[in-house]
Image (cartoon, rainbow, N blue to C red; front, side, top):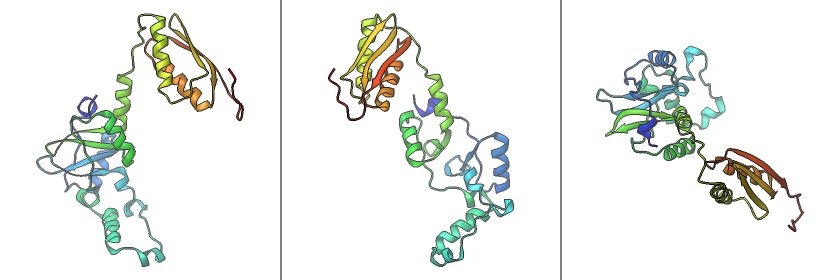
Length: 229
């Protein structure tokens, strides 16, 4: 799936001249956590999020730097912080360097971007204009929509091979693990070197299309012990 398949569109946007109060009211009324800032033609200029409005003197939440920190702080940074907390319009408080994706971006790439940059949403643009937004919630919606159908394979033998391939792909040590399948019920037998490897193999087996039920009978090898099986 791609950004265009899950993005929220049309997007609630604000103009750079919108007042901070109006932006805050809009976020509350629309139950959203951020709004892109666009010019008259819809080109992306920045984004205003709840985080950008957290430190405000009106709410008594303004950040006050300690006196000793002010002695070593950069004047440009101080001015930027002041503008962020005291600015009256969206253009004053918005985050200007906004990461964006195009409509063809894969959900995998978007998830990686959100995780790497520690952001909660990313605007989707077409020729510089905002056409949608993909948030963490949209990725969860895609997860639900793509829930795999449980359809059994041709026979238990094919399912067994699929499960074997799956558990080997986890990176877990599978030398002492065996798979037995009967009428779509997958039985995992054997020994695992760690709880994490055991859990990974169980998840892999249960995720194989056609697995009706998983019966796990894997014991952990005691630390320092070497199996002679």
